[in-house]
Length: 371
Image (cartoon, rainbow, N blue to C red; front, side, top):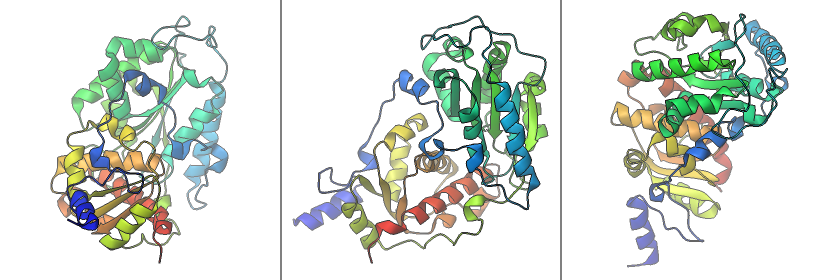
């Protein structure tokens, strides 16, 4: 068997050769993430590490965006003063101060808007603008927060986060009633400890409308916590497509393969095998799955066969987008990944977000292909 034929056979088995000369493979990775890493990584992801209110570009046709920056800036300023010795250091899993009582004024903000209006940028800007040590601020998605509870246990998570000044939760998920109750209970404990909250969220199943989550639904679902949140609506269209060209069409399998071999730190996998591999890796590890990658190259991209697989791909798309990892693909274009039934169902907002983010990453990958 020739080396080129052997390489092709390996690629179609879902694992590209792991040599200095060849690309990596997501399918060959089975990361294990210790609980300590889950806590330490509760900071804005790399894509938003430099996000600031000053770098948020409001749409001039959407005054609510400018207003959001002003309100969040004031909110951050109000969190800057230490309370009851908040500046004292504490251990990873213990208290460093006596918990402060939550003030009567709302200690939380909820950013209410559709995908692509910059909610995550604003949430990360709030984290950066809050004058507190990094170990007293936490930023993570709803999934990452539930994973933290699973890794540490409920009481230990309460202890870990109660010494914080601010907890930012991106994409608060209300699809699973059990997880909603769990996180709502956790947030209730943290509010009692004086932790300020900020959140964005997704759409409940059956809530179609305009592709955005309604603040009234969010406040109702978190029940007793509603008094602690000030809803802040942010109108606008998806900024990733505002004035930008359409996503590049898929490339040929040969182009994608050549780019993978020519790009140091790139991975190469065929899409069907990658989807199978994602089913064997817990979504909490998808971030670690992409460690040290410079690009993700995919061949044979096609329609997602079922909703469980689709939701796993959404999580992977989020982690790739957070880490600014370009995605180069052959096969079907990304806007044909999800069926009409999926795009009209209860998880439609997640799927449109995934399409939007993968499209942005496909633009980023154009430079990998040599003409």
